[in-house]
Length: 353
Ligand code: PMP
Image 1 (cartoon, protein in one colour):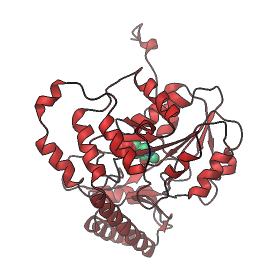
Image 2: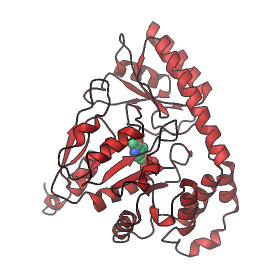
Image 3: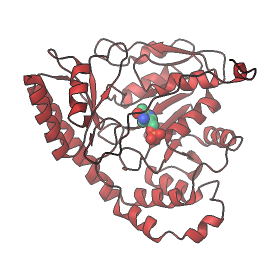
């Protein structure tokens, strides 16, 4: 029987992340995690961190990590905002910047969390179709809107665009906040950070989950002009002042300070990506050009769902989206070379069956 309070509960369809598993034999290529360990300097912070310090609240302004990131990107600390993963930062951006009655714009095929936040925050939105090459056309974003958000490179396509594209998007949107979600930018993409000098309505959001192998630590950040960062801080401080814990603040700074390790591991992921893309094509797959740590692939003979299930039976997890335009594609995260070899072997068997 219905309880009288039930009609007061929030009804919402949440975002569904890639499946997790505790089985150590699983080859996990479904959540765009990095196959390499974080910088050894992160390990050192965790080894030497004193539990005594946890008595105190963390620095709510995260001054040290902001300074380290500002130095890394050639910005001022008041141009940096931090959050508990970029999902937290993006959710706060929606609340801080998308407050008009006009619909915000984002691509029809993109990060599937955007419509969920729209529903949570009751933000009107309009999706803009990608072209038939799965690319975003900046001119489509010119009509009046309440703001623009898109990932560059886009997900799940993996396609990345250059700075001329971002400038075009900003040029047609002088009156809106434009958020570029750069979750995958470090795998060969061109970051919009240099454009922050020129465009006061630009917000760049990045994460340490992918290129810095810190998905479990939860660190994301936004880079923008000080007035926009101050707005984000005000929204965060109206909700939860302590989104970043003391251990995370130190470990994340150690990661940013180890640039050589970061560059090496990103380069290795990119090398493996190019090899994996060529091998998939040799097996008959069509593969979109990717500037990320994943590939979107489709096979003309076998359905994506069938391949997905057959891989899963062999303990290899990839991502399948039951969504228009990509429901015959697989999104495959780049693992180690050995993991990709195991994937190719499994695919050879599945396609021969
Ligand atoms: N943006 C995009 C495009 C993503 O794919 C993801 C990962 N699911 C995120 C943001 C969020 O990543 P995180 O919260 O781990 O920083």
